[in-house]
Length: 317
Ligand SMILES: [Fe+2]
Image (tube, rainbow, N blue to C red; front, side):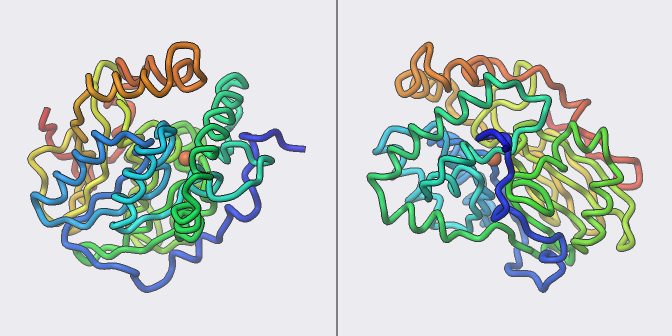
């Protein structure tokens, strides 16, 4: 039997063909915000980014994680649920009582057992907080798993994991490097031009030749945590017809730019808040504090994998 945190529950799955449908929403400028992880300062920052250009926000799951404090939990969810939102494995698991899936992360073999066990402990504590908010729990459990958006004539598939599972790892930077042919097949069946995802915690942007033409997978990593070595900000994926002056990197696809835009939150305030809720020795501190303080061992050059045909944009920073 699969261990909690390692498995990908059956109800997490969908066919890539679900994306081959008319768009659910249309936007001129779209921010896809994955992995906010309960960081209220990052939430403030993305709301500000979107407000400045009248952009549409889509939160594609795991907007909860470190927000085990009840007041914070209420505030993060009340705010996020005013926008378009999809559920991630965290929302799905805290909405229910099934402890068999653990955190529902579907962790692959390259993530160690200690980390998986600590994720299950974090989930348990967060679920305990969620039990105090049955109204929010019901709303989280009722969120959809996937969305199709249209931006500048391009079809954008959005989910938390990949094109066949809420917690899939096929669009992680590791799997895209090892098994690009698998990703290409999923994109072709989904009939989309851009697939925006998150869940696997590290950003990546990679293009593929599909029957529709060039398709792009863009994983924002985390909106609420640093994503690269020595960088102290999160990322959101921006898809729009006009480039952003804020983007760290991006690619052009037809009439649209797809960019990794920094989510510049108050780092010191976030670290202090994190330490208060998850003190030294707690599972979240052991698994995430180092990353929150100084970023993971991962660099921009590893994330940007677009061929010249899509045209990499110059970096803004
Ligand atoms: Fe996730």
